[in-house]
Image (cartoon, rainbow, N blue to C red; front, side, top):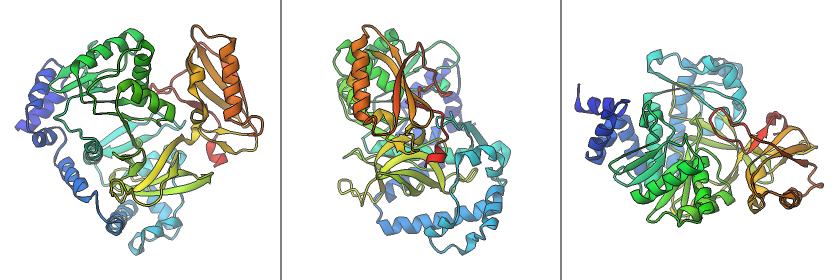
Amino acid sequence: MSSTETIRRFLSSNTIIDTIAGQFFETLPLKLRYRAYYGKTFLHWLAFLKESQYWEKEKYYVYQFEQLKQLLAHAYRNVAYYRKLFDDYGFNPDKVQSIEDINILPYLTKETVRDRTEEFRANNIVQKDLLKATTSGSTGIPLTIYSTRESWEISEAFLCNLLDRIGYNAKRRIAFFSWRDICFGKNDLTYRQYGKKLIISPKIMTYDSIDQYYTMIRDFEPEYITGNKSVLLAFSRRIKENGVPPLSGLKAAFAYGETIYPWQRTLMEESLGTRLFSSYGMSEGVIFGGECEHSQHYHVYPQKGILEFIDNHENTFEIVGTNFTNYAMPFIRYRTMDAGVKGSGRCDKCNRNFQLIERIEGRLNEFLVNKEGKLLYTAIRRIDTDVFNNVKQFQFYQDEPGLAYLRIIRREPYSETDTRDIEEEIAKRFNIPESGIQIKLVFVEAIPSAASGKTLVTDQRLDMQEFI
């Protein structure tokens, strides 16, 4: 067994040797660490992304066109769904002359992928080489996604390239909240420290545990902190409630997994004492991007795939993607059900010719629908959350157009004054009754979580495809 394979085996073990291996891993040169944990594909893409990040716009177009032709040819030869689709539309992938030629093809929906999953799996990739994952169904539609080790390494390369923008690499001190059981084994450990890494499991997030994590992270003195947005938000809110100082010495915080709203960003940056960065992506892997180091605009990687927009209303667009990097289960013109505001031109601050998204408004299923069937902007974005100081948790719920409920879990010292302030805020922000929606407050003891463990901002039970 080679030294690289030995290290990989140690890193995936669930015994005490995992800690020893991790400490040894930290002593290795950076390139060897990456090769040991990821592989040659990762290293190739890491170098490619660095070399190509300042290409001219025309060069990206040529690259995307070549990648698209290869993807379409592969999809027709090896993927049952696309073979039938291309034939039905008279689409010949060998005769494609431009990227725009794919506009003849229909958009791909989540429902289609869910209902015909096996038809999307490429038949030229053997079963043992497939990685299988199931999405949490945060849009209400859980999916099974097939990929390969190679496509996973490519995705990790994109993430590392993004983190490089904020100065992070494996030699930096970092504290991160991780759901991965590989970090903790099967025992009751909630954290692990080795070398310059402090890994904390967010499975236990009580007030007492968060207070302990704060002390632990403060004493560890990391340069970076990262985690799912919901976890970092809970951690930051507890810091604010306790009135303790922000973490000192942080160069940046990095949040992923969910849309970050302005009030959440403000809270996290004030509590953590540093700039917050975030990425944009999804389990399907069709699009990936992240905030610029000089602004909060998202730069979408043209090397990852083709980005399209469907105009919804009021300058808000649904994001559509075609992914180049997962041949095991290609997604072509895939509707993400994410809404965003398009940026214009190139970023004049970093000079990357990436497609810009000015901001992510959220999932379309986080929007509310008025009685006329029109979408109202993401519910949480409209609200001044200062009126929720005495609220433990809240969530919008809708199952009929024109009527939504605001579920509230109260905490001491909630009073009628809080109810009146919330009702006034809701009426003002949603322009009730002119907006055509009624929002009623409902007090509950608990708000159910999604399968992923996340609590959805809006539990939207309407079929949003009907209103887009």
